[in-house]
Length: 451
Image 1: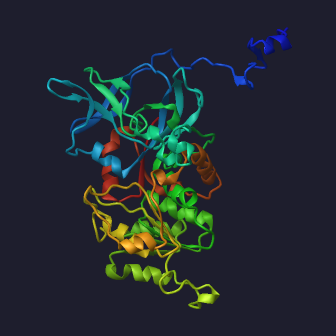
Image 2: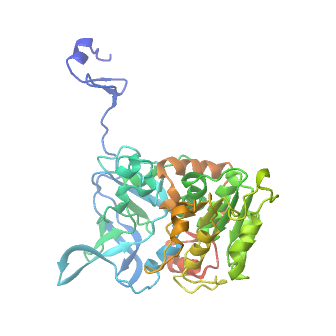
Image 3: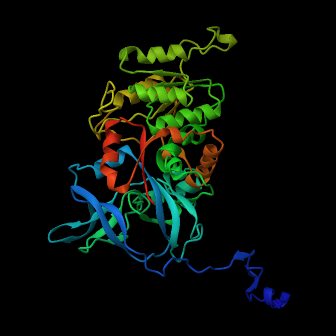
């Protein structure tokens, strides 16, 4: 028989448990504290990971440290092959170190696991974890959403302050070298059989969709959909121009289509990508290498509309152009084997996007890599009185905990075609081949899968 709790007990502050809930006299019912869940006790078994040591990397077996605090151990199902990670996987001349006490008069030697776009199943959780359970399937978001920092509280979860937290030492190598993971929010380490991440990076998803399709969501897919559906949602019947038809741009194409855009014009030098853009929703696809100097006026003319009568809805000569301009092209950090664009730095596309956006229009940009000294120029008068709205973003302005589950539903409904964007699937041992294809730009997107 259940123990009776009297009204006096509650009023005098004696806590009581009723129906699995903790009742307190000082406030509403609270969830009863729960014990941390793990598999195999508090010690996680060693696992395989691609580890970069200084200038080179290889698949090694690492021994993880016990989980603490808000840490979650996620058994990896798939990891997206991101272009920006290639410098950490291929033999690129940049040493990997982490801050700490000098060892032998130099930087502390450290192994680093790249990969910041993965998903999997929760295998164990730390004692302070509340939002996920062992057995949950989760997407590990590129950008965390803690819900408590200054930016999260003012509606800019894409700039969550925990994104800037330092990398955690999550394991050691056979020779005792500490291991960290790539990415903000303490690191993700997707190119491994397991990731040890903070709770705020984990987004529970309740779906049976293949991991190869879901792998687009931790990074590129959510960025592109966020640009068109979250950061500055595309208006139905509007004209949209998208520079770049990589995974981010193609996701933005689909977001604009879902939102009901009238025209979706893609600017992309690679013929195969232009073709795929048309297949997933673009109404036109243009090669920027053809008449490069006249590209902007040609795009304006395409968005002119059916009449030039101002009082019948025409824009006027100075306001002709697309309602939304999205820059998602980036530059070439490696020489591509596919068709090259007119500017390998990618800055020309940024400048063209700015020039193309008319008064009253929206210019959306995302966090793609450019040279540190790269500059975009514009007249001060146009900047201060041009009536253009610039939306810069991290992660396409997405709120990971809110948006990723709804983007999963778009895949389930067949509205977002993630399958077409994944053109190659690899094993962990093929990680360098996967990234070589990515930098060659001979495919759209690759995914590393795990048994």
